Structure formats: C-alpha cells, structure tokens
Length: 167
Image (cartoon, rainbow, N blue to C red):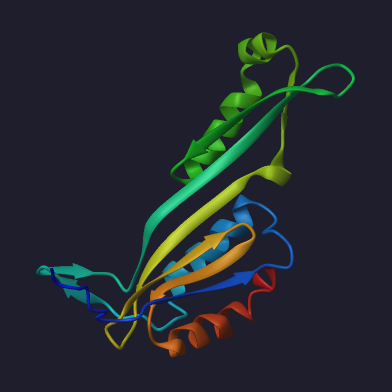
C-alpha cells in the first residue's frame, strides 16, 4: 500500500482581539474595506478559464440573539436566528423584535442581546505569488489560514495594526 507524501505545508495564524468588534456595522465596514480597498495587494487570476477577483467572500454567517424577558427583566426564553448576509441579519432582528404573537407565545418582551451576537466572514485572497489563502473575521479574532509563505501574515498583520477594532 502506498503512503501519503506531503506536497506542501499550509499554516494558520490567529489574532485574538483585545475586545469584540462593537457591532455588525463596524464588522461589515472592516470586511467591505478589504473587499473594496484590497489592502493585501491581492491579484486577479483565472481558474478553469474563469476570471476571479483578487479578494472575494467565500463564506459569511451572522447570528442574532433575542431574549424574552418577563416584567422583572428575568430571561424566560431566547431565540437565535442565523443569516447568510448582513441584510438578512438585520431583517431577522427587526422581524423578531416586532413579532408580538411570538412575544406572547414566549411569555415576555423581546429584547436584543447584542453583546452575544456572532459574526463571521471568510475572504478568499489571491497573493501576487499565486498562493490562495483565507482571512476569516469573527467578532473576537482574525484568522489567516491555508497559507505557506509567512510574508502573507506580515502583510495582513501590518494592515490589521492600522485598524483599531482589530487590536
């Protein structure tokens, strides 16, 4: 039986943030800044004859949390709602907070638990060297994965140092 032979060595680096990113608006602003400004110097490329942008979203997920509280502000129930976009996240919150029938069924008033909301967005990046790597933003960390050249981490880290929310 043949053995597997390592062909390349990919790595992952993580930056734990000093404080969670404040809200979905700040989070989305950071992500959109990378998509529109290309601060990592990524390059367009072709895959299977199809032109690819230098940086693209490959995955995103936003989770809202709504608490239901009784008259004494005691939590008696909760709902989480996951969406694949910021627009869906915002719509979920609006719908859940305004749904009186659901509040009645839960037995309390709907209150947004913004402190425990979760955000995640992964960007696929094409380095000028030809390497494809991923940068994943979450509310409390920044992760670079599937890279082999340490210079990629240096570029992302230098940029992240300029963004106060990523300290």
